[in-house]
Image (cartoon, rainbow, N blue to C red; front, side, top):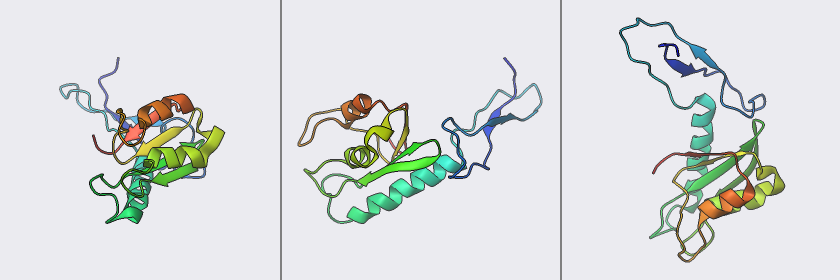
Length: 142
């Protein structure tokens, strides 16, 4: 394995974004430096920013729950979005899954907060994501 850090290119655009992560390029550094990896890409940052924009739509209505937004992307296209509107109602991931429908299978979901994995007033979002067949979950905050 090379000792070159891997850095995501920041030239991905929404319409042309491939299903996989942004193509990677290698940077040559001195061999004394440990390998480093930059996590994420410009596209990932934009999708997470969209999650935050969606979450803000419920500002002042979700207490005691946090503000959460979710975006589902397939082949570089947003196919579903959602946010948690108020406590006791479905979470952001569920609304995004409903909007995406069958297009969620094999897609990537961006969520501003890790999906819940417990039964409360709503069922676990983690189970809904697994059932929908999503390929990847990118979380903004754990």
